[in-house]
Structures are given as structure tokens and as C-alpha cells.
Image 1 (spheres, rainbow, N blue to C red):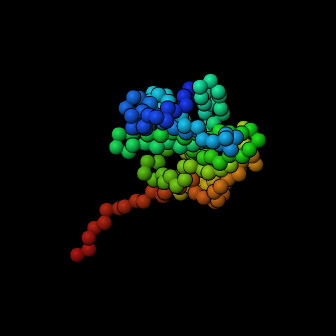
Image 2 (cartoon, rainbow, N blue to C red):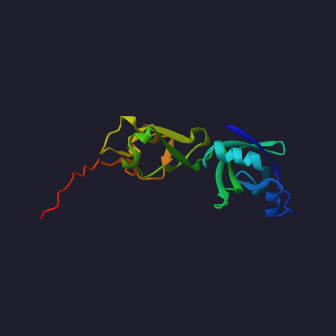
Image 3 (cartoon, helix red, strand yellow):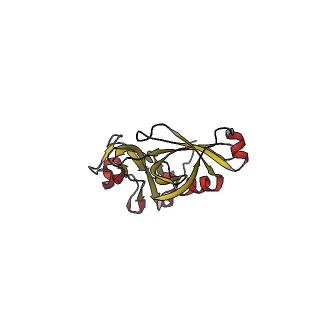
Length: 188
């Protein structure tokens, strides 16, 4: 689990000014906390977080010396310049299920080019923190034209330690058939 140092946010400084000073605002929430904690982190740490982790990843947060096991819950980006505007974390409690997302990553997908149709790449689920799954990598090299891969076809998803919040028959990907277009000679 990655570890990130953050500080409690100085609420007298507006978010826009914080960003101008190279800081990113955020918050930490969870049932085990008496209330949400407003935080700030330096821009480089936030960029590294977003580059190395996906939403749903476990992250250890060090808030002014106090360490919390958390899940990276959400990021807000400025769509014009990709600047990170805000980040959110949910504190994990060992004996309490948490809702999260499994990210499906495909390898060797260039083999099929535009014939590969990605239908579902984020699988919502709930589990105990120790059973959380960040990503599942699927190698599509052994698939062939016409194949369909559903949630129930992925063994890691048919695990009794996670409660899927998606139908097992949901399609993850489909490899479309190649269409051959012969040269047609116009009739006269």
C-alpha cells in the first residue's frame, strides 16, 4: 500500500489560492471518524497519487503524524489543463465492508485493433478491506474473433470474498467478427 504525507488544511486559505501555492485540497471521510477531515497535499504528491493509483486503490495516509489506511475514492480534474482540483479518501475499517471498483486492464489488445469492443472496464463491488482488488489484468491474446468475455468468465470476480454489484452476465469485452468486403462490380 502506497503511503502519502498530507497535512490538515488551513481553512482560512481559499482552494484557488492553495492551488496557486502548489497545494491540492482534499478530504478524508469514514464512519470511524467523528467528522470529515479537510486536508492539503503538495501538487507533486497529488500528481504521483493520480499517476500511480486508480480510484479504489488502497493508500496509507499520514495526516500530521497520524496514519490512516484509506481507499483513494475520487479525484476532480480541470478538463482543460488536467490540473488536479480535489482528491477524496475513505478511511478503511478492518471489520467493515467497503464499496469499491475493480479496474479491468487489457494486455495484447492491439492484436484486434478496432475489432475489440470494451464494454465494461470498471467492476463495482463490496468487500472487507483485506480482500479488496485494485485491478485485474486480462490477456486477450488467446481470444479469437467472435469471442465475448463476461464478468462470470473472470475467475477473480467469482470470488466469494467479494460481493459484485454488477450482473454476472455483463459483457466486459467483445471481439467483433471481421467483415470482408469484396470488390463489387456495378450492374449495367
